Structure formats: structure tokens, C-alpha cells
Image 1: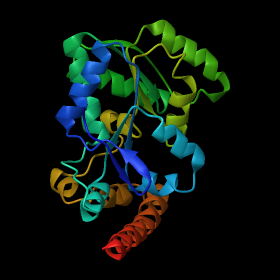
Image 2 (image 1 turned 135 degrees about the horizontal axis):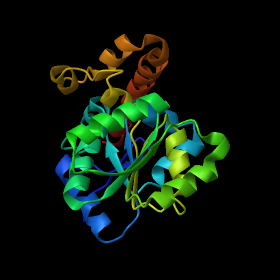
Image 3 (image 1 turned 60 degrees about the vertical axis):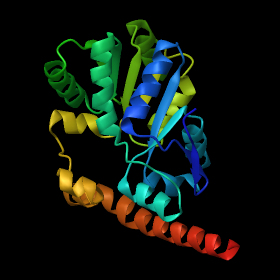
Length: 248
């Protein structure tokens, strides 16, 4: 049985990428539905006050740790976290798995031009990948109709590129009607695949500065998420650490 941990009131799976992919593959093989989510600093902070987000995250079957801030925070509290499982890296690994296992996939989210460009590039990267369909992320007036479309596509894996908490809530709300075996929120992944935004260089990812790289690219949208939530998260960690000292 793979382990779980609780950090700042949030349950998580402190797994490696390999363990995560193997567990998803096992669940797919055994016909078990899986709702997947990654948690980062912003999500942990927002969960403290957003009860709807907390519920939609904690109902997930697999909760990976994304973001070096969470990894370092967990280790500072004495929790064992082997590595970060970045959502976009898991996304690519699952596409490779789907290509190998002949699992069909569905891409949902972003603007129509973006998701079309992303799918076109992914088909070049994974020529044997079975793409059941794709749809833009502006469907809220026809939500039930889209769910029927996804189910009719026969997709096994669904990747949802919509902002939080909308993507988690959408999957949780329709998980029994989507007809898929696996559903995962992938945030801005389609923008990266399509070439609209870039990932931070590897060295920045390894030293935990990916957030700064994204802030520099989109300061108007990201400043609150990173600067404010990082400060709140640091305060939460300090409080938790002082509580640990008090118990000794």
C-alpha cells in the first residue's frame, strides 16, 4: 500500500513519478475510476478558506505534490517527500502510457485555437496516440451536453486545462457521467504545449524558482497568486513548526 501524509490539513500522496504512473496504470487496468489532482502552494493556501475547493481536492483518488515550495515545506516539518511530481511532466508520461496501452484520450480546455494547436503538436509527438476528441474550455452554458459528448467519444483518459477550482469542481460534479476511467486537471499545460507560454529552464525548476519565471511572464495575472500566497504559506509553515517545538 502506497503511503499518504497530511500537511497543513491537506491529505497528499508523497510518491515518485514512477510510483504515480504505475498506480494510475494499475487502476486503469483494473477498471477503477481515478480523479487526479496536484497540489501546490497556492492550492494549499486557498484550501484553508475555500471549502468547495477543499472538498473537490480531498475527494480525489490521487493527490500528488507539485511545486518545490510544498516539497521543502513538507521536509521542514519532518515529512518524507521523495520528489516533486509536476503536473505537466505527469501529463506527458500518461500520454506515453496511453500510446503504449492504446488508451484513448480527450483534451478539454483553453481557447479553441490553443487546444487545436496543442492537439496537433501532441499528435506529432505521439503518432500512435488515440485522440478521442477535444473541446475548448468555454462551455459552461452547455455543460451537460459536453459531458455527453465526452462520454460518447469513448475516451479512457480526460485532461482538463481549466483554472482552479473550476476544473476540480467540474470533474467532481460529473465524474459518474463522463464515461472516462481517469480525469486530471492540467491547468495551463495546453498553453505550454501550443507554445504560448514557456516552462522555466530546468535549473530554475530544480531550485524552486519556476514560480518566479511564470510571474515574470504574466505579472498581471500571477503576482497575487505567487507573492501573496507564498507569504501566507510561509506563515503557515512557521506556525506549524512552532507547534511541533511546543510539543517537545
